[in-house]
Amino acid sequence: MSKSLKFRKKPVVIEAFQLTETNRGEILQWAKSNAPLGTLIRAVPKSGHAHQMLVHTLEGTMTANVGDYIIRGVQGEFYPCKPDIFEQTYERDLSPEQQTLVDLYGDTNE
Image (cartoon, rainbow, N blue to C red; front, top):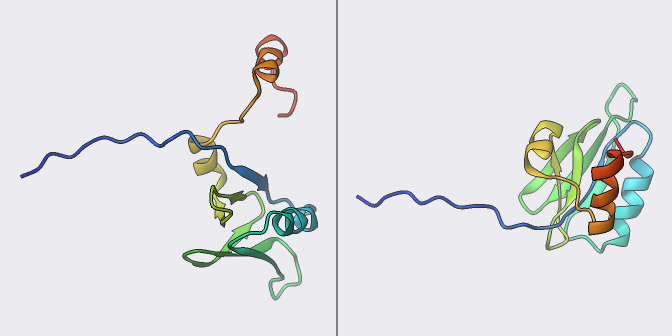
């Protein structure tokens, strides 16, 4: 019987937006400017409230809700990610100068 091995995720820089009730247009513009392998589409539920986006991923169409992150992966693909998973998996990518400022004054973008 073979023994399981441990693996660490390679450090990869991704781009992401957190979906809010007011930034869907901005996310769509960002997605179009990146020549995606997937696409994003506004989704309007039957109630008429625009709290979702459809994300055509490499694995099929997924729904992103307000609060979810829309991630552009390393190959230009898009996919949604729940906020708790996003925060466990990713941290902000800062230049050394930015990190020094955060260390001195805290993160002013939170």
